[in-house]
Image (spheres, one colour):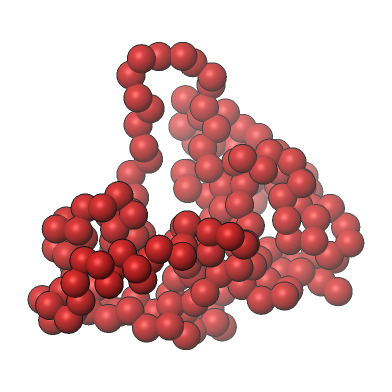
Length: 184
């Protein structure tokens, strides 16, 4: 059986996929029983490169930096985090900026900033739900990933906290606001 991997790094980088250079890789099909090695080369000098070994859709090394989201039994989206030098400082580390309306909405709801989250919604959507309903909707999920597969109808996948499975959702945007969220 072949697995199709799509890659979603949270930072600007180029990749080596089994040693082959890829600037912006399309999804890659690979046998599920063979390891796939992905080396990320960040374009910011402050970040460090690293390699992840994938087998059967799951990261086998550097698991704290790579997360797998299972879309179907043979499709996975692999998210990659930044790797920094280990420097001890009393100053808290900066969070990377969140790009896109759905990821910003998700981050604001998860941090409890409901007023700011409502500013990303149209008036109709904002008035149709209360803060508790918004928090309850996003509660089972730990991450949001943009859909890299054009043949799947979702715009984003919400990843479950307790598993690596992702649920597809269509986030409809009207201008600079989200007008509807629909499960696919």
